[in-house]
Image 1 (tube, one colour):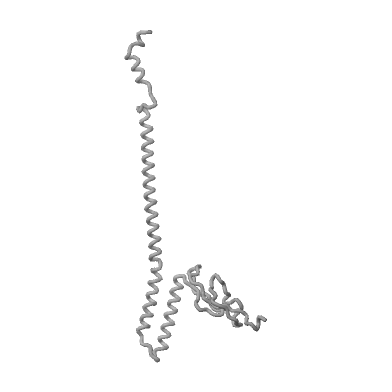
Image 2 (tube, rainbow, N blue to C red):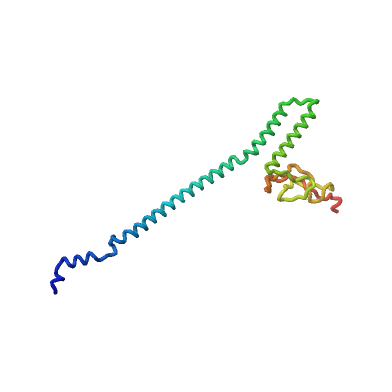
Length: 183
């Protein structure tokens, strides 16, 4: 063995120059960049998640308010008609004022129908129309030659639809051929 190898100072200097996998000296920079990037991504994710949760809460509140106050315009318009009815009820009806009272009620009815039309509500199911079980509720049938068989001969309650949706079917009587004609 040579004397150079036996000297402890020389080997220790060479060992210090070696890099080990766990050594932090050069690996610190890329790992800290990754840690910063991970922390930034996590922060962005949490921010976006909080924003989305707030958005969901806002949409739920708006939908709730729409259901709660959606009919406000219709009711506001309807209050005007109610005012007219209340004025009519305060009027003393005599034989002399009967015609004007009836005219006032007819005008109020027209206002109601106009109001419904402005809000997309339409009346249908008139006498003489073809019976359609998706739009009409048949209460009974009656033999008649006044209207064609399978058509509406009487309407007890007219039908109403809002836009394209039926909100109340008509209650009707459907015409059938009179017995004399059936034989």
